[in-house]
Length: 397
Image (cartoon, rainbow, N blue to C red; front, side, top):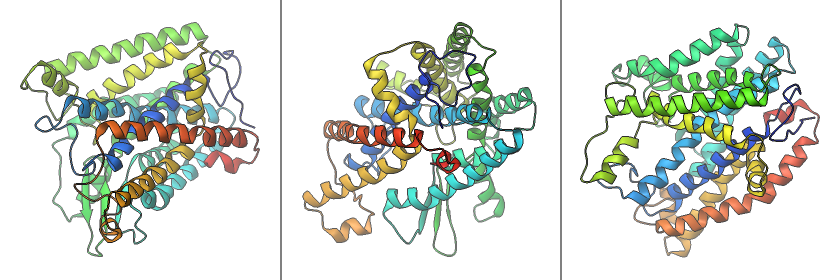
């Protein structure tokens, strides 16, 4: 049975859940829903770039920017959770679990999640997003768990710090090398002769670095670390990452293929400074997001507030919430478009998201709050149900 930890669990206890981790993961899951609500419900949500300095507004930019924290922390903590669950397994058992769960996540991505995103049963357009990245990275980690943890950590950090040296590498479209490189490091939309299009939104190489580093990070929650020692590390590492981001970003010489530029005024210049690259996640993007993530873990540990209990519910069942929230938000979009007078045939042609339709950003925020509150009792029920199950099958769900 899965054991639930408080935010200040004894350091000598073998835990598969850590309260502060559930709170941080729940927080990013809640924020994640804002981004996807904006995609489906904001007017032309699928047809603009919210971070384009030439067309965005500060409210729109920061609505998108705050959600940048979701994917890196989600992937990083997936690695940490793999370490925590692995302490009850032999290396061979952990490897087998990571390989099979990774395959299962990739299967979910290309079937259930793609359907909830597009409502297209022909699967003529497939997108590889964060669940694919976690699944593939778990499979890689499954082969690395036999190595000394310091070697695994070194590999993860080298990938995170060094993968931007590969930004200029590319291969001709239509070649096998282009497909492989798109899966690894270059966001691409690959069109096959069969008529299917594969959208690689999450090239997996840097995410491997994030997940395996998160796996090593899990050691902080072992018996070798007291809460005080762990919090000291989180504070120092978090501040160092934030300082590293500010320094490297200011120098504009390495760490992101998109340099910041002076804009029309100081606010837009600041927005440009923050506008780092997510696809694939640059070194600066990861420093900007994972550093504050560590500071939040530092702040959450040992704290008990009513809102913390609320947020942690979402963090205990992230996959359940992730899959279903796409379905609910997409259904809301379809219902909203139909009530606005859009014909069913137009919706069907555009997978439920036609251009020049949608709601204002303020209305999007109202829908977002509604979606989050709708899922609270469902996530609370499922977390309790899952905690009562003893079968290993539930660890895949």
